[in-house]
Length: 183
Image 1 (tube, one colour):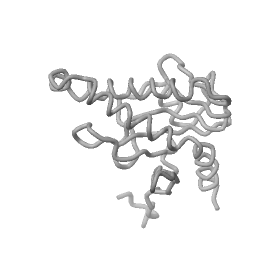
Image 2 (cartoon, rainbow, N blue to C red):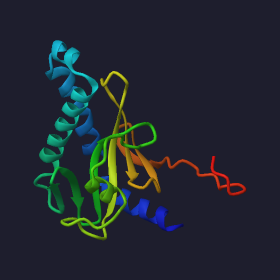
Image 3 (cartoon, one colour):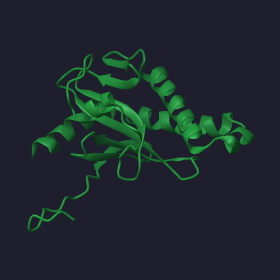
């Protein structure tokens, strides 16, 4: 087992007791947005407004579900909102694409986080992750919840079967460079 596989297993073990809660937070946020926002207002929202609203509702879910839980801390460092679990995992909630990548204009602070570099106020040994939610094109459902190492070293998907949660490794296979040429 290499260091990233070991890190993935550790991080997912830390997150495992929270799989159902994380999944429910994202599903509740999208449901509340769609049911609690009038059709007229949703029609007026561009994708940025809709996605910002859904993210805000999801973060409120994080505050509600994790705010008082022992060993978990919600941090807001000049706009960088993260969940710290036992100083082992520090995760950002983000909308992601099918590959688990978040797309946005990155601030220097977000780049530092994603590069696994030290940031004042974060435990230095904690692995940095994105706990992402992939939405369908109409923003009506959460298609899946993905946990991704911020540098893409590994990607996991939280899966529910008969209300039992587990994770699956969905890290894309990397092909070795052939002849020194990048494809």
